[in-house]
Image (tube, rainbow, N blue to C red; front, side, top):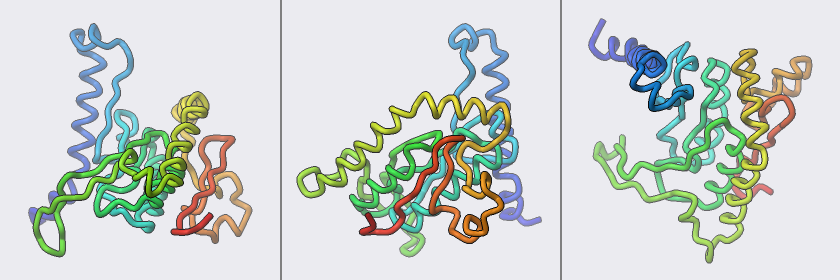
Length: 223
């Protein structure tokens, strides 16, 4: 086994063992328990089967493209099906110039995810130029309200909607932790008999818990 092959094989296992050890230490340490008697909260950028018992995770380093927004939805579904319930993606992406419409739609499509985060990398590695480059800022508050009030309003309303569902989200995540049923899941989980659900792209819509069916806007200019 070459060094690169070994790194590929062990990389995520190392993250799993690290979060497992930390979670167990946080639950058993008298010093830590005196500081915080609640269950530990952790988020890891690297996971492995079984990681969901100890940590949540987010999907990172997305390009600010409509294709990567679509991929992020499938990615959160995958994490939930692998047992990592506290999962989310970088809303708006973190690589490339900001697109106000894309950022607003990405917010809408993600606000019912278990974890919601808007983030960007100040620098990134450009595979084409083989250099570290400065990355344009792309956070929600940087949507120009004068030039794009519609998209700033759209993003703000989506965030407010999340807070109106926060008790529902928490309850559904608790139920998922008990039953093992993914919170974010494809529609065919509930309607496996429908050939249409199996034929349509899985990212077009998803189920958030038992009662919400989210239909996504995934193309520029769509209404």
